[in-house]
Image 1 (cartoon, rainbow, N blue to C red):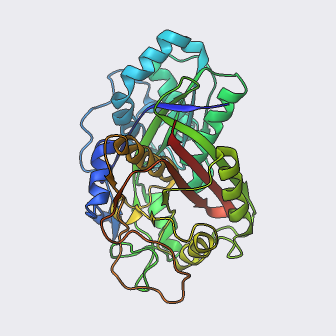
Image 2: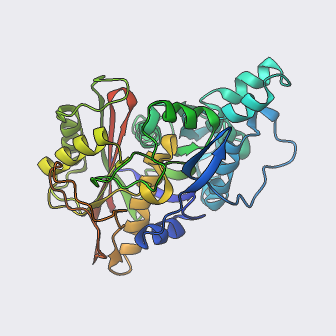
Length: 381
């Protein structure tokens, strides 16, 4: 069965729309800056301006920065969502949103001044999905996905399955996360945060920069320009934080995605590319073995690692690339790099200079704590 992306939008430190974000990436402009959290400074991709406030009278458990970020993107595609409601009915449109922490920052600040029911509802991982359903008055299935850094990507996989099983006629899906004290200091405790701009696959790497953002998609079986052609996903439970360097499960995942998509070639790969030694080693080996000559890049050096939103935002980059490629040759997303090649890593085709081409099929990769893996293939229909 064929499934299509009828509309999409996004926001992060690199821009307020999908086209702005892709432009920033193609110009290799870093949007990671120093922020202060408690008693320490960190490099992070924080959204500077959120133009549209949440509606007055919104239940308190929906009032969070996470949902405020998500709301900016919902407004971008609200016309398409309302058309879908009119066509299919509010009881046939599902919601699946990936995230990792929801309103933990608000609860942290108000822990002594908030009732238990609000505290619990605001902190549940299904909160963003329930928020979307509340905003649009939807009455179908709605749930959250929280598989660490694959959450946003696996939300799209779950959405596709809802359509395939006939449980929904349309699904609003994607990912969102906001910067918060728990996440920042949690990653800091692992000693993998960089105090400089992250440079994945460079010998000068120092680690990852965190970020925040959201990307949302309207997915249906109604034919549109961009098709969600295939996916692969698994979990090898190798280690709580490190990926399996053997790449066995990751290789199977890509093979599954390409077989499902029925494609023999990929024109662009959006890498997970966190800038940690563990990820760089595994992912470069994976790509060298399976897609050595395919142009690829990590966009996290521009926007930061947006955690539960990363898989969705990076899928959005692929979709915007496909959309623009239908008009003319497009500039492929540049890889944030300092030209310091790590001779210990297998060679992959990183996009370090401007390349213009037509794009028909893209692959977006996400890897997460606990050995979780996700691959998404999108192409023009």
